[in-house]
Image (tube, rainbow, N blue to C red; front, side, top):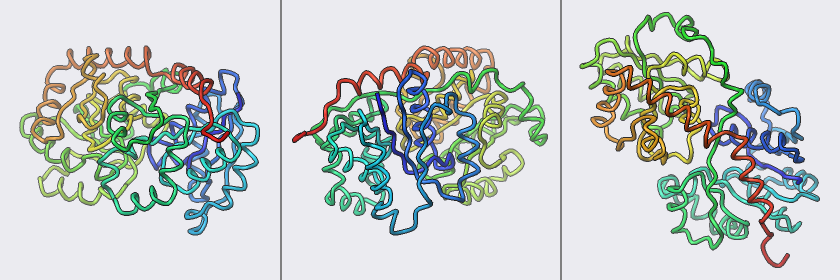
Length: 390
């Protein structure tokens, strides 16, 4: 099959969608399909993007179509992208669109429809009620100006989990909602960096156990709740530390202020973004991974943490109930007291934490590798049909 993936950027600092798009594409290419990837390549992101692509298994099998750095007009109307998409989509069997609200994504749907090529959207949580409530007037306007029509003409909506499917259903888009999770390339992770590698780079941690938060520093990731929870935890466990890693998405200043007010500056370490082997080195040394998000589609970070064999403590809004079902960690309400209690339970019982970590690693390898997800997605493409009047 000739398959075209479209995503607004491959910059890993944006979060999960770029990482998912390129890895799903690479896994499909490894199955022998002709895979094209169209994206904007902003000059300021080139180094990070190049480093990400270098690490992706089977990346050399991909046909990459980087588009020039978009200005404001291009971001609004995607006219240059539309011309490129027409050429790339010719003769395609399927178009997979990652995200919703960028003009390049709607243009991809428009071009696919004009060429009678079936396509799907992967909203990655962007159509659930919490996300729609952020800048709601802009999203209502976008839906009225053609984005809803593009969604309704898709062959299916690619939901990342059953919860996301349930949350999208009230929009009544009139198309099937297909659940396909995210995955990992085990070969990116194994062998894990030697234990102590991250500590050696951050000697201020000493030998104390630390909890790792690894995500964009954004309001929706629940850093304010984590700050309150860690304040309570630190009173009971006097050696535990907190490492916060990720690019600033607007919440860093508030988090740092909360930590300083609580007098915990010496036990909380904000280390900036971590990519590739540096990220896995941090996971290998962590006692626990924590993500208390207000909303997630299917967190790549949670999946990678489990693949590395460490227990996870996450919020219910991460929509990953399999964590609790597999006893790979603890799922809690978005509440500081509940979060502190769960983190305390992990830190206080290393043997049980190790068992949970092993359960998570087994879960990922059984259900959430990119080879498994790629094969499932190809099966969906093969039965998809373009919308009428094609």
